[in-house]
Image (cartoon, rainbow, N blue to C red; front, side, top):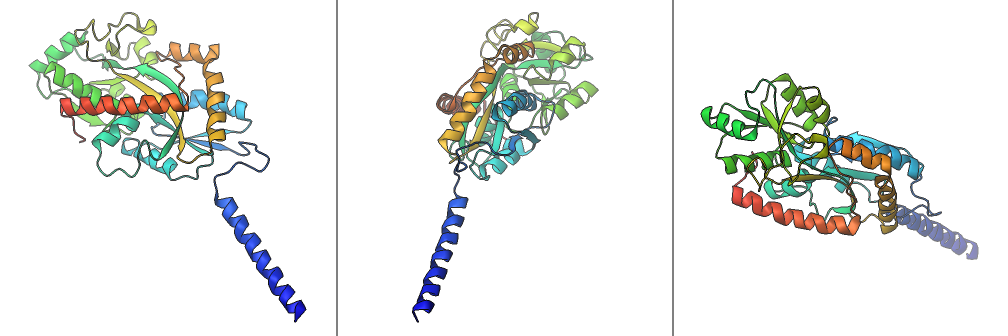
Length: 333
């Protein structure tokens, strides 16, 4: 009888040990030796290859992999105005092995335009760091007979509903900023949304669309080759890399000040030591001369923001764009 009780007690203890181990394994904790990461890290990108979001992801992925001692794999998941990538990361295990490189237009504008989103920009994510910031540049195809923003507005008024513009998707900053320009100038231009800047650029270069407003990195090579004509930079000052292109105030539109940012997020609930480690390594990378020079060459800025600063900045951006969208009466298409 005693032996039977011992066997039952032993079995119960073994079952409890297994149950406890399973519960422990389900928690988003660091490895027992405190090492992070101990395997590949996946960086999910909310846009197709070729756009600034993708460029920012690849700029940071390689040096971050060296710093962490593990591969950082870029996984492009375009579509749904950033929702496909955002939802994937929001539902991922919060252990630091699945991260999001998100475009500001998708993170702070999509939630303002799209009803019943399956993710929340604040509740579902832990800010890690801002990686790049950049103003927008309005470019047109070379065959369009305009050489300034003033001429573009005049052409649009003389040819109502003839022009169209590309964006990286409904709810993108490209979409909203062009709609804002349309309202300011009193013109009509048809919106053609794409799944990312890369596909939009392909059709713009091919002449299927007339213009776009986007960040400088994917444009610079085409501008220098004469394949695209820049008309204005949406900032208070000219860009050093585009010194012949007027700023928004110089072009007569001082309120057309639009800047994009590209930031890294982790799923909400990711352990603070993991967030802090990632942010610290990213800051080191972004302060390097090589990274800063590359960003400036592309017309962008290596503007680091850590977790708390990024969270605060994001809240301000949500409030700012909510006012713009309401005053400009912009709707998702």
